[in-house]
Length: 602
Image 1 (cartoon, rainbow, N blue to C red):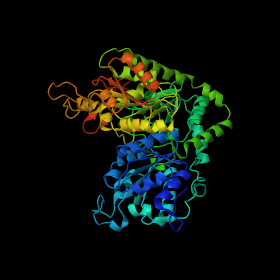
Image 2: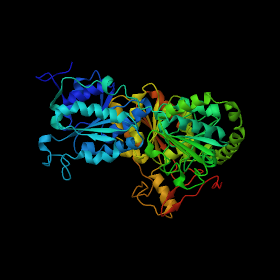
Image 3: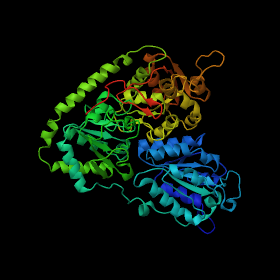
Image 4: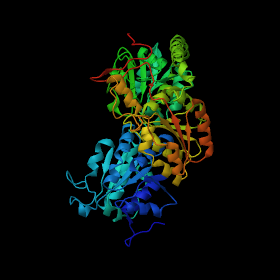
């Protein structure tokens, strides 16, 4: 029962919490502060309807909310206090924004009566209570109600903004007194305001017919699956189209798993470090159907023709719900704004009206055989790494052993670092939500903390974070949260005693002039890191150390079976970087060397 004021009205905090409950939000992740204790009190009042998870750093709650949505497809809320509390959130907020992940960030602010007076933790020098200016460029929108009566409108508009069109996080910045002010007799009803809004717009019907014409006439078609395809729930439709027309499917870094990577039409990663059959197919394609991919520099080999893509002469069909992404980096033969699931259903329906579709599919055998030849060449190229028994452990072998040890329903949450590149190449997810990572903003800590959100989203599935030693050390506070809320996740700490991805750039571009990338003992000069396994045990988490590749799988299986928080500290070689069929340019420093396949010249 809600406690109402003397005038029978809910206060601002109660309206927000009640609205979240009406939207069936199961969790609020956050950290307390003097600026949000009223909001926390409203959460306390409704503990049976929405569960609160307290974290030990504000970025953690944002990463958790991000990963929760990627697994569950349901937005949750975060809460942070004024000043440094909410200022710790933007890294996670930006990651969600660039990857189109919605969550509602409820941030506290100073009382309206103290605006522009320099109250404790007020950001006031450029504008009164001006935290919103801090985050406007890294979220869809900021709402800041300054009176209690504005809260109902603000919360319902914030939610609608968050989930419609191209989704993304929204900030609801609430002054201290507005949480407490009388706001409304009733909370806005989602069934009246947001539940009946659909953003599943279809493509122009003539454009659909043109796309089908191009796909049927193509001799070397390829589909590129981006993350938006997974977020739209379009994986079944993608598989149906690929199989119907026998079109191979490559994926961007965030699109991995859009179709089962063991499927014969799956090409793997298209990237600067992409597999030969993936990059080789996309750069030789005569028609490329891009579904929700952004064509960033890593996917596109820094837009240098002949490595990831050759557009033109490849004809690009670019489909995205956000028209700003269409034609951003490559000219399009056909650009269509649409929800991807709706578009694919339109294409499949159009194909039902066409004759000779089976003959077209049969004609693709030569193209698929060419790709299979590239796949065999790639497999020969990577074969030695799978049997390397050296210590420290070969990173390719480590990635492969991790992949083999995970059950088919497991969720791997990857952090950012050199390990991410190895995992993308050598892990084979079977489901769209089996591999979770962040690429747009690429913040270290996403995988360390995000695995907690993934576990809350899928409590019956094993959830494993693979994270670098640098990222884990930044966010080791997650150990406490896992223990406090009994979240049985497994961390595999990829321990190479360095910020190894950046050290690799120093070695490759700066003639080996390394600085600020190695972790070393100042007395012995030997590699240094904390004993992560001992650190875990001190927090109440089981921790083990692994130095042999053959022991990785068993450690992961034991960690999952333990059904409690578990950390595996794995000693990984830092001197090797994954080679691929693409390149990457750091302007002014040069272009990396292609490892296999050379440059395609049409």
